[in-house]
Image (tube, rainbow, N blue to C red; front, side):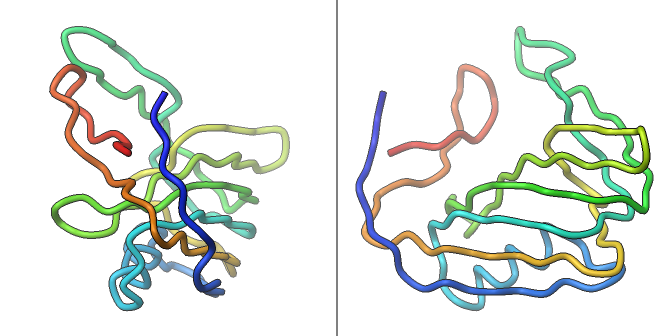
Length: 144
C-alpha cells in the first residue's frame, strides 16, 4: 500500500450539456483551473459511451473488454483526476442504464452527454499523487 495526504482545495461545479464529451470537458476544466488532483462525481444523462467492463486479457498486457452503451439513459459515476506528464487525466467508473439495460464500467471514448450532466470536482491539494506508466501491465496507474 502507498498513500499520500492532502487537503481539500476548491470545489468546482460544472454543467455539461447535450452532446458534450465527458473526458474532454472535465479534463479541459482541470487544465484551465490548474487542477492536478481531484475527486470527481457525475450525475445525469448519458447518450452513448464505449465502456470498459473488465479485462478481455490480462497477460502479457491488459486488454480492455469494450461494450457500447447506447442511450439515452441515466448515469451515476465517481472518479479521480491525477496528472501525468501530459497534464490532468480523469479515470471514472459509472453505472449507466436505460430501462432494464444496465452497465457498470469505465466509460471511455465517445462518452457523450444526454440533456445534462452535473459534475462536482473536489480539488485535492498538497498530495504527490500522479499517474505513471506501469511497465508490468502497460497502463498508467496511480503512483503516490
